[in-house]
Length: 397
Image (cartoon, one colour):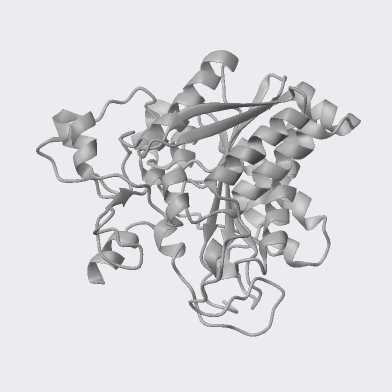
């Protein structure tokens, strides 16, 4: 067990995804029982995803197009769905961690709405934006309902012989436990990104650390990188990148209210601030103010729901520096970035909270999409981002 926690606690994001505290006082936020594991058959699996995307494409009469963007390590196709004809690009992905399924359902609902509606609001969105969704990126992990993909270090070495003599990457899971990584190892795909989109793995960069760049050694990360590069080549920039995740069970700072969702626009130290000198090569691209404005657009959309669980929104840890994440790498490439961290893991809620949590993600996504489409996001004061309450792991603090 010590080995498990040593690996999983090596980044704040990884640790938070496994924290399940005991029940606190009654509050309007998600409140599963400690260590509760519920059926997840209400969430969509890979086979159902393919059927649903095909249905959305057909009923949209060509407005939504679905392609296979790449393949997982086990050979499953990674779907990419696109809608819109505008010059501003929004790229959204879900399930980079295979046990974080709420975002996939929300993405499908969003695609269905945008593909089937002829309302003036939707037509305006489609005129202004090109929206590209990668639902269920880590399909192999999703089928196993676990965080990591399914891939052995030997397969990495086979693809990159220059790594034959190095220690496995630090994010390689091969330990025993509930997910049997010792028998069926894999990688945390969300630590395999590098702001150099043309980077080729080099032996001297292994095993690496959570505060260093990734390598694009997993086919799942390579697929996202390739989609990102293609969009940059076609449009000049990927304006917005959104990553849909789950987390543990924090509270709104200073209260006993459980967080429904945490958000963030900060994943690396600002290259234009003290401590960010190591990212100097990307300083001209980095736009922290725009990331903060995007987060405010989703925050305001949820606060407009009135006093409810939808307003239990907090800022995720603002002290992280994780350039090997997709969000960190793409922020350094000039994208406005947004993290969605729904509280709890999928199996902690089962059907009980599915509708509420999916609607939270949908509402936030549409807040961003509307704000970018009509330009109102640019009128938001980025300093207001700092007023969003932080998360706390202890109630009342």
